[in-house]
Length: 370
Image 1 (cartoon, one colour):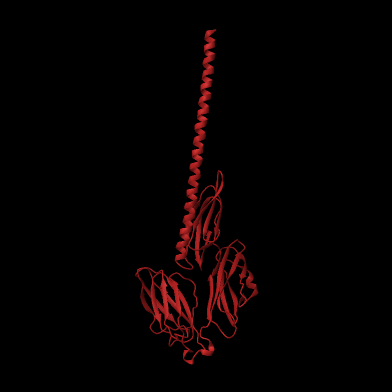
Image 2 (spheres, one colour):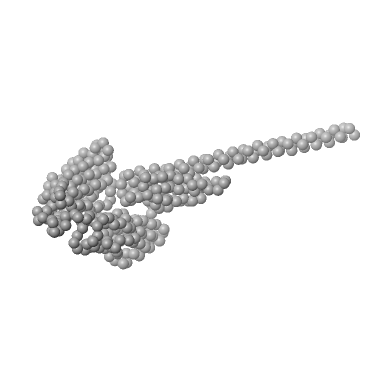
């Protein structure tokens, strides 16, 4: 009898010990799980911050290289990301955590726009420099506008000026795109509209291009800088934009005070470009106090201490006397040259610069007063 009781008591004691052991093990596992969860949250936050920083650094780098520059980065969007956005100069990734959601951000030196994948995975992110901003998106987009800046600079006039500005929409993809464009313009002194109303909606076959021409009407009362944009939206979701800037310089060589001796001269023209620019921009500014000032031709972002061939073509597309010439880039990849326009003919001049691998094109306009 005593023996049976001893065995029963021993069994109870074993069960009690097992229960205590299970309770202790449960506590240990709970603490370990909390630590693992905390470590996982910290790791995801670090990975998200690293991803945002990588995008911001690449955007700053591309923007510093000039309009048209483009590069890609391979990026992993970590687990826990539930959304992503580009707001002004901020890269934002939204991370889900135990207590809710937190925003992981990185700042850029320029405005950014476009789209980022908002779900975890590995992506190729393409980053493209535009005028005063950078486009960011996952993968190359099929719809492109070139140039992305429509710019015109002119002195004030006693009469209305009519100027055409054009950009080319191209389908770089393998499927037909339906494209809708929207013109954003608020000024009444300078008006901008479609030369062809059909340019507001059209289709592009693969590899097809279409020139979109805008009519710019500058009233005699206009003075200052006027800006707007042309946005193109494609049926595949692609969006791209061309900025529009019209600069009307007041008090610049009015016709009633312009002496006959300056009918074929121009003052203070400056053109500058980067080595990878793919667009051109006209620039002309008259100064009646200093009627003939040399044109400054400057360029940057070339290979340091390299030799660049610089050429200048007149309005008839003939080489200007003294060109082409060899220019030596300095230690930061910049060079500068001057051109005396005293004997130049009115019209558009073309600047051509190239080294062994890259080229750049720029132009300026000499306009006679009268």
